[in-house]
Length: 452
Ligand code: UD1
Ligand code: MG
View 1 (cartoon, rainbow, N blue to C red):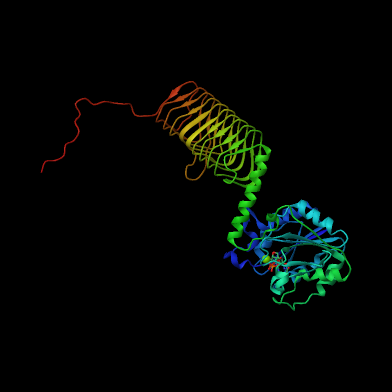
View 2 (cartoon, rainbow, N blue to C red):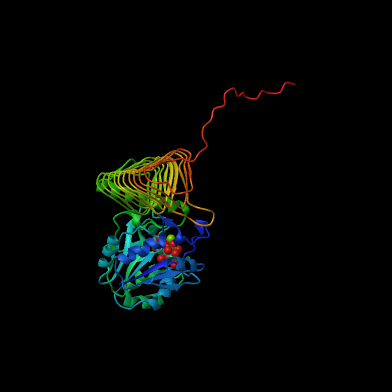
């Protein structure tokens, strides 16, 4: 079995410089969805037909298992498939997919291939409003006779509600011959792939149809309106699957998964969260409202309060994070760590039970267990040219408004007084403080305003 993906259309109605098939649904290009589904079917070959201005399509989606063929000019769907023929083996089945129809399930396509085992098979749907689609014309016995495009259809044919989704399984050995037999003598002056249906019937081959489980599976994208609609459908499908699996979603309509989200038992997710890349939430993790998590792994029992932003972070079990915490790439948190509001952590490790609860910057630091990072503490990790490391050993207490000028080490059990600017290592089990001594000046008077 071989697959041809038609992706040469310009997508004028997208009003965009980006080719239509590169617009994203769930953070992934439309055509990438189609390619990923195609791969699930294990084809011998996948050929993508791209068009004018489509070099960026090719360079964006390029992969070792894809063959590419350019269609220029674009003279219709039949002409598009014709461009792929030299790339295609002439045995088995050829499955035609559209690069702008992203949500078709592999199971549906398997049914279609099965229906086309000994002939030709068309994926069709019954639409309440079939306007714009090619109609499936059947004879009195219900056998498919041909497909007629809307622009070529009679009034009676326009009344048919069963439409061609465009997705077809074609016997490869017949394909080249049928395509050669196409003419563009029709309302649009195009070579219609759909005309091969009548040719199959004339050749006495069985023509069968298969249907998707949901209409959304065969919806295409021609405009930003349709792109947004498909995004919501896809997101709702993801949310429903999470609900079925037992995840508690405050509102399945206010969740966005742009990658792969895996959840353990009793995970709860509040409204407005965005999950990107690969995100793992272990058992009983709770995510507060409006959090953004990208390539993150969170161990069991951790709670994120509202408005947290996590990127490439590994968070240990039973942490309490946020609200308004920012964990940047390279953050590694041990068990029972607390990261509070307006705390930024980057490329740093905090071991078990350490806390940075208020307004801190922890960058390029290795922090031991049971460390308390006071409010307003900053690791001065950057000297304007290079980044340097801060080491804070176990059981350290760092007073508020401390600057640790890296490279610097704070020894085990040390205390840093509030307001310290640490430029040399602090010895263990010792109070280190760098600040002017406090003085009170008796009899001092505030200045008075001059009299005119
Ligand atoms: C096509 C079908 C119609 C079906 C509808 C489903 C034909 C003649 N008609 O109509 O029966 O109901 O899809 O959406 O096949 N493309 C190319 N090169 C071309 C023309 C199209 O690659 O020269 C690609 C487009 O990018 C798109 C797909 O083929 O992905 C369908 O093309 P489109 O112009 O949308 O076909 P329709 O007229 O809608
Ligand atoms: Mg179309």
